[in-house]
Image 1 (cartoon, one colour):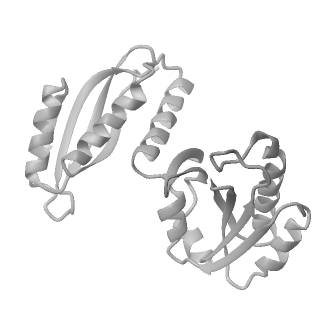
Image 2 (tube, rainbow, N blue to C red):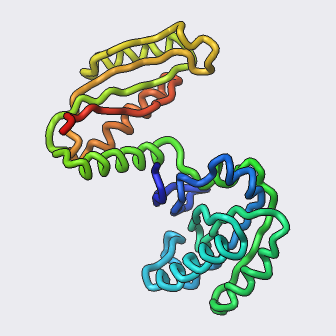
Image 3 (cartoon, rainbow, N blue to C red):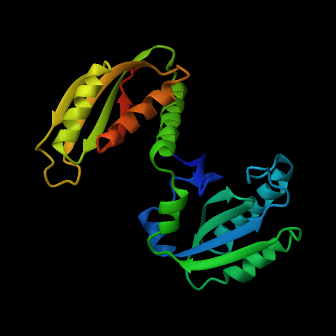
Length: 250
């Protein structure tokens, strides 16, 4: 469970900030909440980057908190996250059909008369806005996963300032890509554990590569080393699935 996470990206050469509930969107929610509700407000005094300034945080937090409560209690839906870009902040909720969302949210924004805002209600049975826009991918998602795993290891009492054997997994669409990546990883000091070339023939990414190397998880550049593997996989047409490690039981 990844929970709520914040990350930054770039959209049309503009810095964008996201805060998203990565655990939202289970099958039950998708079936019962097919309507997307977007509340977009114009920031009063954004930073030069187009993101919000600290002096506006109090009001923005109040809007977000009230919206989350209204969504759960009166819209019978779920608040899934927000984006901030180019001086605007957009809050996203999924709700059932037939709910008077405009009436309820207009009432909410009556408490914040200084803000200009827009409401947008649209069907989104596939939760495309959540999956294709809000949800992180690639490097952003991997950094979040790295952070989560390290937090869990710390909470379990592990000392991260030591060597852990990390096992990595990459899937490939073609054999040549897997073999070329395998050779380069070996040159970089990784130990190749296994390479499967025929067991997953019906899968779109049938070739699987497993490899390991000892890493100090407390190193300041640990995140960047994992991202380098992710990019290496992409270079050879592969998808980096992730890493895992074993810890001593206590």
